[in-house]
Image (cartoon, rainbow, N blue to C red; front, side, top):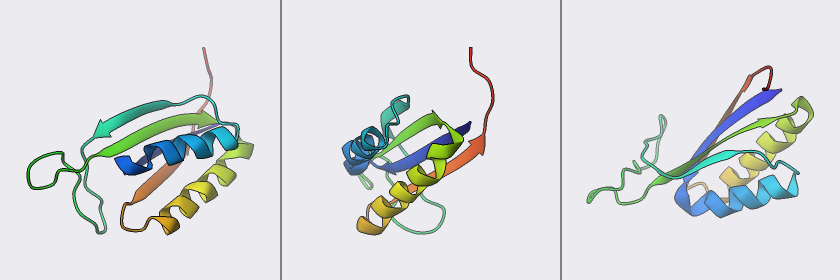
Length: 97
């Protein structure tokens, strides 16, 4: 199994949820408002006077077979919304209770 963490401009929150639903990814934890700043470019999203926008974040544990398709979907969202920004990272995880 794989854990996928993603952070995006909060304007993309619903779009990410819709994509997850279409891909059959049901389980996730989401944070609608988080502060952050990308490591490459773009403006900070800090929720303050100078940088009023915020990010959203998600983590989802998916089957190995879903990971590549989901990462491709996130890449498509990024290409369609370059100015907003979205990043996703995955790592191997094991076991559930």
